[in-house]
Image (cartoon, rainbow, N blue to C red; front, side, top):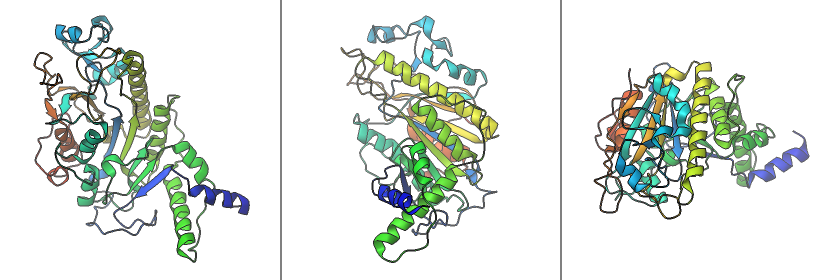
Length: 402
């Protein structure tokens, strides 16, 4: 690398928010020195041959306008302006259907590759964005505080093979969420395209004298290796949507295409915090979600990975059933989530919350605990006992086939 270009790159490292690394086992590719974990399975026998993709709907997605109870008069009474008209709903049953912006998901439904998880929440819900997503990320009770994410605990107990590029890659966000804490080798990319452009300036270096310079050289080496793991030689035929979420899906598919492998990928889309003028914003976001998930499936089919990939959405909470005076909805509780994949048994799971039996605060009562969804991922997808990661027993939901 030319000296002036290299010097510019090294100066940029000090303000580089593009990549963040966390590790809990020695990883030659990323050069970490970290606490030891239990021995991992060999790549050929590891449960992590099956990929998990989790999609966070940031801000609290409105479940009632995502899965619309179009046959329920109470829904229209609570939402005289925001309710989706029955003729516009993508019908899934005689009582519920999808927001029209989610119409691309009808193909998943027809193929029985879409599980719709109704009323997902937890007891004593917290309506703070920060606290509620922390509860989801750590799989904790609403009145307890846990440091490590639920995936971090999973990987610490059942390690991912060290030959994998990483345990997980986070795309489109600079926080690790369920991968926070000590126990996961995770790479977080807030801006994948910018990271790859800057990382192209880096090159491997020898150890340097002095702790400050040695640290900079280590960061550069880590970035070089991360770039290698994020790139792949596969040229996708799939066309990815030309928006931020589409770009994140494309970056995630580049990671998945690399033969080195990862166990999990986390994507995010937002903001669903629709207090004001919800209709247009919500339709746009749901449309981007549906377009991105459709492109993700096509790319995974190209890679022959669709049948060994499970995609699950989550959000910190839903929205209040009654619309507010600003043509929006305020922080609520239970909401719908999706699970998609070639091994998903499509259908409706859980119960639609009763709009005539709201809680004392006017919010929905959850009918499916989110940790039951996590238990399904751990037990039915990866074949891992979920009790260590979830710190209690939760029954899996039957939306996966072997």
